Length: 381
Length: 110
Ligand SMILES: Cc1cc2nc3c(=O)[nH]c(=O)nc-3n(C[C@H](O)[C@H](O)[C@H](O)COP(=O)(O)OP(=O)(O)OC[C@H]3O[C@@H](n4cnc5c(N)ncnc54)[C@H](O)[C@@H]3O)c2cc1C
Picture 1 (cartoon, chains in turn brown, yellow):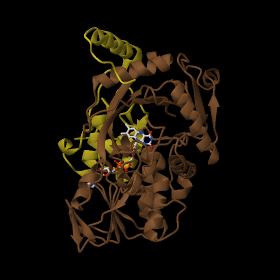
Picture 2 (tube, chains in turn cyan, blue):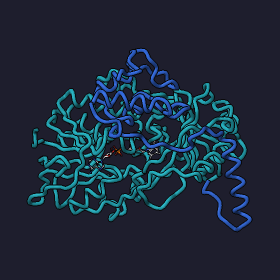
Picture 3 (cartoon, rainbow over the protein chains, first blue to last red):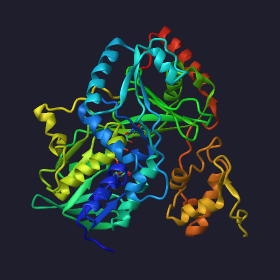
């Protein structure tokens, strides 16, 4: 077994796999990706996989817009033989308070500056898009047809198989248990299958990234927050777009397969819990049936939980360890890492390959929590 | 013992209409747990939630990789085990909330 690589990537979610692919595309192919279980076994395989460009900060709107351009042809981009399941049915964002409605007007300005095709709708116009919407208490909505969702398993597989074809190696069911550091420089990792050396190690372990970073002497302010979701039995097409509301903290969409996937986002104490609760099940149904009464007759068939890797300003952290140069943590996606994954991977790969990028990677450093240059986002669930 | 599901076109997962051959293709492509197969094919994600196919897929994995059935990882079984309508659940929440409100309890965040 080969024990020396140029780059080691920890974590086989969308971030690790997309970064492996983008590095390989830039000629860095001597890479080993190590995954504790199997690819997509973390948050990537538990997520709603929603993709939206209707953000309130220019940064997120750009990350999502540029990632969407890749999702739109990910199969050709990676040479993948299966559909990645992108469906651009749009996102309908519903405002239930005046304050929220005012904020939406500001968000639209940001989106329009970037050329994102979003628009404001009256409650009646929103009802034309989603006839089942209960417009009681609705101030207005915004809609972007190019928003949608994709299949997180196939998107990740597409990147992984593309990377593998260029020579990247994958080691699954293997856990990274320690780091090797020499003279302030990362030298390799310890795993349940022995040590591997590399001068660059990318920590893409999502909610487990802080534990690994701590081994390199870095405190990453990311906590884990449980988020639950549920799915109904498949029914005939009722709603083509995602419906989402920040003030009522819900999202719901019908998948191409016919089932409805939905969740609500009550704030919870940090935990690594994967337990599903009856409380979520009932409260979720109450919130959803209020917004879309047509859902009342649908049967729930499964419920699950995953974790958000929450950062203080709910935006990603990309940071090189000071006491272990070459060790980068890429985490803190705070519940929207799937939709920005393709662009973040490009940014990371450009940085490591010494190529220019139109985005400055330094703004993602955790230094921002000291300098106060936070990446603020008004539009999150 | 002769495997009962030896025909290529035998349906292993009835809810998602998946043949034994489709599952075998997946196993040959390197997917080696029930969880992985579920994620790439949807096997076990339909209305019956894997009550029939889970065991059949476990058998295929067990014979392909020559590992005992007990070692084939079983995916977590998630509630609700019997489909319940959203309306019934929504009403249950509202009832619980009005009960809690009378007791001075706090409602949800929605
Ligand atoms: C319920 C829910 C809904 C969501 N909905 C959306 C959505 O609609 N849109 C969106 O964009 N995002 C959504 N997200 C967020 C999204 O899932 C994540 O931001 C994204 O998948 C993160 O990808 P990742 O590769 O960083 O992490 P992961 O997919 O978690 O990958 C990290 C991997 O690292 C592995 N690992 C950890 N520690 C070790 C170790 N020591 N050694 C080896 N391997 C290790 C894990 O096994 C895991 O596979 C949602 C999340 C949840 C939980």
